[in-house]
Amino acid sequence: MIEWLLFPLVITGAALIPKKQMTDKQKIQTIFENCNLAIKRNDKFHYPKFQREIKRDTYTTYLYYLPLGISSDQFEDVIPALKDGLNKEVEYEFKDGLLRVDVFESELPEKWSYDVTLLQPGTWEVPIGRNHKGILYHDFEKYCHLLCGGVTRFGKTVFLKEVMNTLILNNPQNVEIYVLDLKAGLEFSKYKAFPQVKEVACDVYESAQVLHQITNELKKIELYFREKGYTNIIDTPFKKRKFIFVDEGAELSPNIVKDKTAKKYAEYCQGALSEIARIGGGLGYRLIYATQYPTKEAVPMQVKMNIVARLSFICASQVASRVLLDDVGAESLPSIPGRSIYLVEKMRTVQVPYIDDKMIFKMMGEMLHVDTNIK
Ligand SMILES: Nc1ncnc2c1ncn2[C@@H]1O[C@H](COP(=O)(O)OP(=O)(O)OP(=O)(O)O)[C@@H](O)[C@H]1O
Image (tube, rainbow, N blue to C red):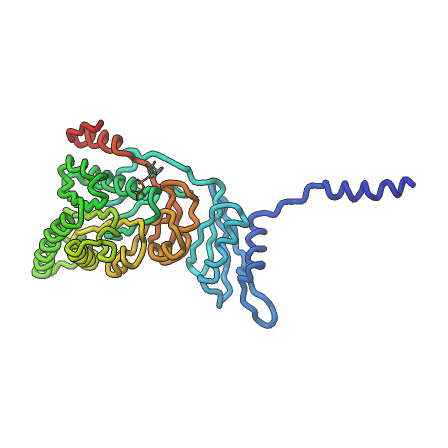
């Protein structure tokens, strides 16, 4: 009788013994197997072979040898499963024949503030955001132009202002800024107070005027460079750099503009921006092109093709993500303002620093003694 009572007790007891949790390393291996990340040779499956793991303060790196025949594309398909399975942020890289998977222990901050410690005076480096490894900077001397997009209200304008503030404070004597603020000048008109901000165009007509002036100048500089045998401004004694900010590039799309005359101006603007993207980099012109409608119409082909660096906030669809990043991913970012994917060589998720007009005007007043009375 006692035996009969003991039997269910043993079973219940066994069920109550806590199961040993799988480690992240085991989970990764299981995910590779379940997702068929393997090649078949001699009736045997060959999966990525674990090499070693490196523990750091905030993340762990797992290194694998990839069997010959597994492409990076195959691995990229596994990334969503890895993120879900580990329930952690994951980044990866292929380097020196090794696959490197970084698994992060903590979440990125939902908000962090810009401050003067981010400045690197004399350089053209601008903070893009914080990721798990530290703060990422975009160097406009290495990657002249930047394409930025994502749905409305997720931080494009804040980011553009942060870039402008950094450029001015890092190089007050050498930066010239031109803004095509196609949201009727509402965001950037107040920056005319800064001597570095040369023009703020508020519609397609004013934009055409500003771009006409810039492209004329571009042609003269191109001629001068040719005479002198210069190929890139970086190798010349010239220190000045000219930045053209476009906030809402879609407003310059001839397909969106209704008015016939405005259409012509929009076509002109898109042509001029394409020229700046194509030949301006070597001559010291930098284009920062932002749009909430990443479509073929809103981002002219020549502009896109000549902009290697991209920053995408959350996108409405995979199609939009592909226009901005040439890949999916931005559509599944968490809906946190300032959260974005920075693409230069590889994609990295970052939280852009937050800044507002008050902070900008305060810094300008304190550091450059600009008379700035913003209410
Ligand atoms: N980096 C950030 N960190 C935290 N919050 C942010 C950040 N950027 C933007 N926000 C919040 O999101 C709001 C919208 O930002 P922003 O105006 O830059 O969006 P947007 O994408 O330019 O929108 P729109 O296209 O309508 O102009 C800001 O007022 C702020 O509250």
